[in-house]
Length: 163
Image 1 (cartoon, rainbow, N blue to C red):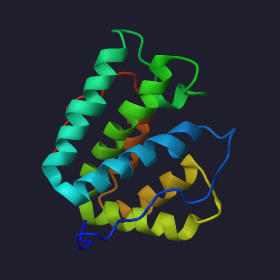
Image 2 (tube, rainbow, N blue to C red):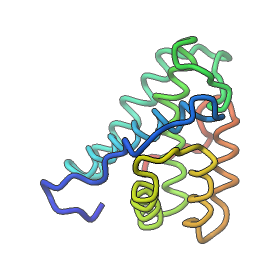
Image 3 (cartoon, helix red, strand yellow):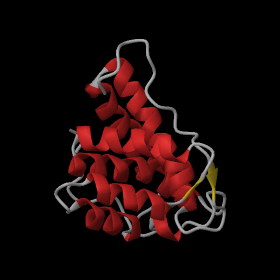
Image 4 (cartoon, rainbow, N blue to C red):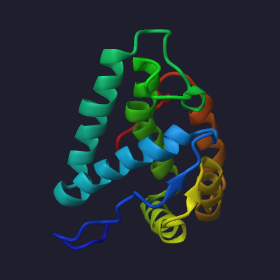
């Protein structure tokens, strides 16, 4: 991530959430989960992130969610409704964000996250705000569509890669 050892990258608890907004749980919890994984990557290297994605998020998802019972991230209205809802946010959400990061590239992703943090400290932040920033920082133009597809799809993203 470019930060020197011993210096933590951005911490995500930026502001307030709209409790009724679509994608609220994704914004509040999935992004936070993925940024924690990025912090582990910052401290211990890219192999640690790959292991977390595969051995923690993906493994937990498969251990809890039975075939055919997956829910789309955008269908989650509470992480307390079911194990499947919780796994869509806490396990699948970080996997979706990693695919978005891969699509955008590390530099664009990191610059976007820093700018969102700067712009939304102590301000309301929604999924729509996040999508606007994705569009601003995706210079190839293909990531907003991918992101939207991943949010409404059930199951683990096809072609999932951890590099």
